[in-house]
Structures are given as structure tokens and as C-alpha cells.
Amino acid sequence: MSPFPDYPVPVDELQRLRSLERHDLHDHRKDPHLDRLLELATELLDAPIGLISLIDADRQWFIARQGIDLEETPRKMAFCAHAIAGSGVLVVPDALEDPRFNTNPLVLEEPRIRFYAGAPLTSEDGHNLGTLCVIDRKPRQLSDQQIHLLERIAELAMREIEMRRQSLHCPITRLLGRQLFLQLGELELGHARERHTPLSLVILDIDNFRSINSRWGHRTGDEVLMKVADLCRSNVANQDLIGRVGDEEVAILLINSTDEQAIWLAETLLEGAHHIGVSSFHNEQQIHLSGGVTTLSDTDSDFASLFQRATKASELARVNGRDQIVAMERQ
Image (cartoon, rainbow, N blue to C red; front, side, top):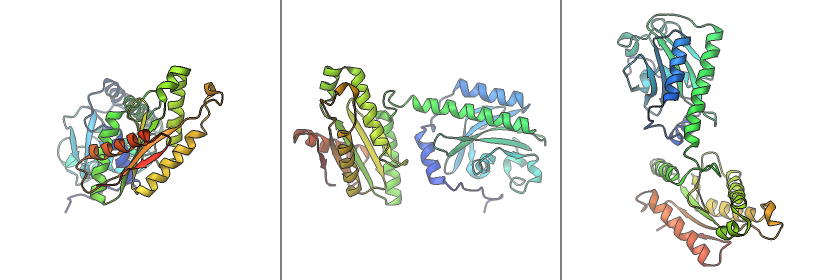
């Protein structure tokens, strides 16, 4: 039995953990921008300890820290685990007087926390990934102005994190790059295995993309890429993954989707591409897609197996005449 009360679990916990994974922060390198923001927070709020923390399923870890040697703690000890369950700054004036924390080892032993104030780090998709917090070893309060200041600095820290995330995306389409798509796909395959849920993959090729670049120029080619990316985004759920995995290839990983649903989506996108307007074409050419579809099999040892099968299906679609979808059965 835990020596202190359990932490509250956010109502969006599954989506929050997925968002945290997709920010790719588990091996976060030291970031001088985050260090400076945390230093600013501790100086302005006159706090000896400051942390930028992230909370996963069972631990919190610090991607920036001031005045403390700890690098992580169990989630059950984390003040920040309570802060992410709310929508505003959590202020604990005196932890020894608060039944949520007065038996916590972080209060009774080093670093002997008495005061805590944490502002959630809220992602662009609306999930609290962690906090920017300040800590003191003596009881105290914050004014409304100080609370507002802490919120603003947390927003700046989250902006830095989002900018780092965007650097891993294709700059033209804003889709995931190939490496990150494959990395996150491996994680989703693991989740599908654990939860016994279906997982489907669609790979789409823009037909004759090289000839589009040759005839109308790379600016038009970029426009085609952006509009195909927008078409994909508008037809998938927030939980699904979309990546640009080749010059003219887009991959869509459909979470908790069957092969029938994946084929329907692929056919919808193929038809939708026909109606994309590109100014340079002057109605002389339509956008056509060739695609491959497959679903997770018990024999798939890793995500690469699923990816290779979908790639083979898309290659068959091109060989068979393009502008079509081929479904590759599970082996």
C-alpha cells in the first residue's frame, strides 16, 4: 500500500500518453532555451528549486532543473502528477499541511518540499504533458500576478517543446518525417499487441510526381504535396499517424482500424485527390494516387514487417496501372 494518497488520473490519460510519446521527449537532450526559461522562473519567483517535468505512465522525469540533483521520481511521488489533472496552476502553500503530500518522502526527506507551484505544459492538441514548477523549502504563497507569470513562462516552455517537435516534421507538408513515423509506428504496434486492437497501414504514392515537377516546376510539386497532406489530415482521426516517408509517398497508420476501414479510407483519398485543384494545371491534369493497404498480423515481428507489406502493395498498384488501391492480405 502506498504511504501517501494516490494521484488523480486525467480523464484524457490514454490520449495524453500518446501525445507525450509523439513529442519524442524520452531521450530529450539538454536544451539551453528551456534552461533559460526555468532560470527566469526561479529568479522572478524567488524560488531555490525549479523543474520542467514530464509525466508518463509510471514516472516523472526532468528535462530542465535548477537547484536539485534528482533526474526523475516515481509518478506516485510527483506533485506534478496532481498538477496535470487540472487546467490551471496548482499551488501548495505548505505540503506538511496538505493531506495529499504530508506523508510524501519528497516532503519528509530531501529535498524537503514545503511550497510547490506548477503550471501545466499543455500541448497543441490539448493534453497536459507535464509542468513547469517552482519549489521552496519553506511555506509561502504566490500573488495572482506571480501565478499569471508562471503560466506565461510555462506557455513559452511548451512552445519551445513544440518547435523541437516540428523540426522532426517535413517542412513542406508538416507531416512526420520517415524516421519518426517508423519510430512511432513501432510504439503503436506494441500498444496494439498489448490491447488486442487492430492496426492498419495505408501507403499512398502520388502518381507521376516526377513529371509534375519536370513540367510545372518544384513549386507546383510542393503545392501538390501540401494539398495531398491536407486531404489526408482531413480524413483521419487525431490518434492516427501520417508521415511523408518518401519523395512522393505518404503513409497513414490507422489506430484501432480494420482492413475494411483502411480500404474505405484509401479509396476515399484516391477519389478526393481527383478533385484537388492545382492552379498551375489549368484543368489539364488531375492528381492520381496509387496505394497499398495492409493490417497487423500475428506473424509481424515488428513495424518494419507491416511497412514492407504495405509498400509491396503500393508497388503492385503502380505496376497494375496506377490510380488504384491494392490490399495485401495478412500472412
